[in-house]
Length: 344
Image (cartoon, rainbow, N blue to C red; front, side, top):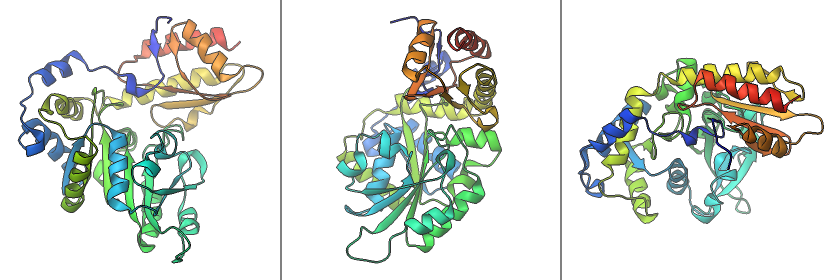
């Protein structure tokens, strides 16, 4: 495999910094299943406070956060409303069906976002022949929407419709802190309209593993039961939870650097032949662009990789690049040099 000098495939490729590794090595630990791991307890309290919820639960992954939320909020056969680009539809191995028995109704809307009218139209009438609409799912930021930020007013509008329709609400906050840093809106304000919400430590925050979901104490009690059932309960988990503690203390504000690097990358790419990209749409750390002409995404990604730059093909003519903790401004310039050699 070619040497990768600039890895823009995803913000999941980040490695813990030396300071984070040291902090993790020195973490106090205990049996988290018994509530005796002080570092796990600390990160849970931090996330509950951050999101303005009663309690939080440390989990191995964001996917488990989503799947547990579906199982708590829905009964098998009920329906979740989500944008058609939603992570559970595309990237959770059919988990909504296999683990929660949940039907998913995909909603449309530009850049990974739907509006209140779409929610109104999608909520099922009370009819025994139809699945019951039970849960509204929102992803902040939208991954396949190019890292687009849901405005707080839109979140309020769609959750208001859902609540009037008797639905529960869930926030997939995998990149919530990117939205917080980009807008200045507090995480608890984004999370307030939702019955459950979570953040990921392994993306832009740079921890090697883990996520935490928050909600009412009753929600978390049931989530704990499902965590145990799904094999997510651990023992001396403080060693990995410490990565989340360190990330929240040291890696949130620096997300602005990733956003600046993404905008610079977008501006440089947009100037190249055969690339369709409006840099003004790049709000956070994700750059998605289209190719026109004979070059396909797979060939372009292979050519970039041969020059030490890794991006991801998201379709026949769609490429995604994601900036993160391990990509510097200088590396963005190297990536653009490689792109200039490929897109001629």
